[in-house]
Length: 418
Image 1: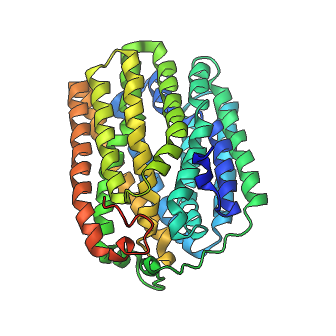
Image 2: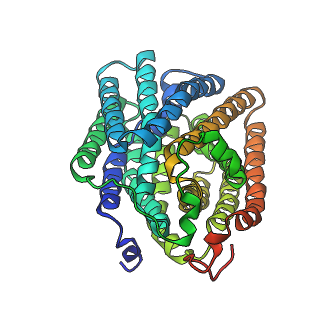
């Protein structure tokens, strides 16, 4: 219980978003299985699946940019609620109609509106949380997401063969319950007034072009490249790994992948409070570097022991530890270093850059997987992860040089270097 006391003292809205994430992700049964739906249910090849992901990304890119612009000009809460209502409608309809191309179209529509609301969610969390509390706030939100996800992927794996339609219905109902919580309990969304010396980097720059702001922050620009490479490799958890399990284990692949995903969430729930509490003195750049090392180790174990189910679970533990370190660093890093006036737009631009690289990377992996097999695809994945690791080491020195006030006497982790 002592570890959970570190989350005390946040605003009420932080806890509402925490419980809302639990409810939403308890019903998050469709997206983790999307690759297997396309592969096993609709007969798509790896290359076709990757191409569909590319189409989805192309559609969502302008939606993400629009969402960022809206987040800086309109009510973030209203944007989130409207996006959720569209998603709810799409998932319920998917559950009521036969699985077909229309189902894919509805899922893409839901994805578009989730892309629109994404920047608002990220910016809202930064708005209501002071700099000193952001790591705890992002840790709490991440913890809530994975508490909800502990059961849903395994249940989705059980429902996959005969009751897939029910997964869509449950997902829609869960998002609906979360939306009700946000409507009635998220009241105070006024941005926090920052007072610390480190808040100088968050000073509003009204009227300035978002790309000029990003160009002036070269360190953040390098971070964007690093995180894009990281997610290109990380996303193979939802693309290449389930393909491999389906290829090797056939009909049991969906259930195995569901239990692996559930273990991912269990490890997050068990270790996020521990890692948050134990490693508070390691800065965001240090956490990023540790996260990439663990990601690479997890994938290496999975690839070297492919076909041995026990190794999947051992690999996912290493992988998830890396995921936790990265998540604790990611949200606070960006929002502590960009103007508060541009949070929505900058987060959307960062998301677009990541998505563009990610979709192209998936197409490449899909084509390589179809043409030369597993070894060639995993070689490319490891190369992307290694590049992200090397650049994250470079970021440590650059960040200290360009954001010295975050390393000054007022910073909470001033006694330890990365």
